[in-house]
Image (cartoon, rainbow, N blue to C red):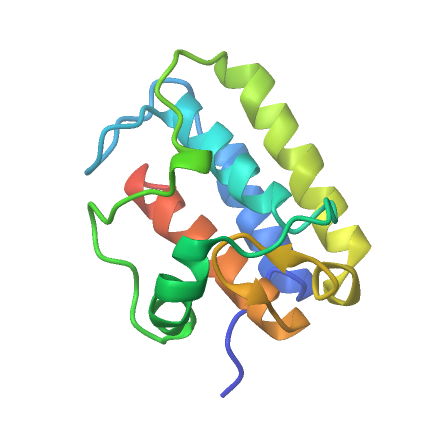
Length: 151
C-alpha cells in the first residue's frame, strides 16, 4: 500500500481542511507550542522544500540525518515530545489568523510546485530526498501536529 503524500489531491485537501478547522483556542494534547506557534512551525518546516538556497547538508545532518530520516520515513507515527530542530523552533507569540493564512499559502505553493521541485532541494538534515519522501514526510509532520491540536 502506498504511503500518504501531501502531493495526493485527496490527502492535500484533507490536511487543508484539518488546518481550516483549527481555532485560536485549540489546546494542545502534548508539547510546549500553542496552536499559533505550531502553525508557524509547520510553515517553517514546509519552507525547507520550497526554495533552493544552495545550502549544503550540515555536519549534524551528515552524522544524524540517515538515522532520523529512517525514523521520519518509517510507518511508525512520531512520538510525542521528540526534540525539534532549532531552525523550526517557535517560542515567541504569534497571531493565529496571520499564521494560519501563511501556512495555507505555503502549503498551496508546496503542492503546486510538485515533488519534482522539492526533489531538487537539499534538506538541511536529510540531504537529497526523492519527491515521494518529501510528500510523505510533510504529510506525516502535518498529521502529527494536527493530532496534537485535535484536528
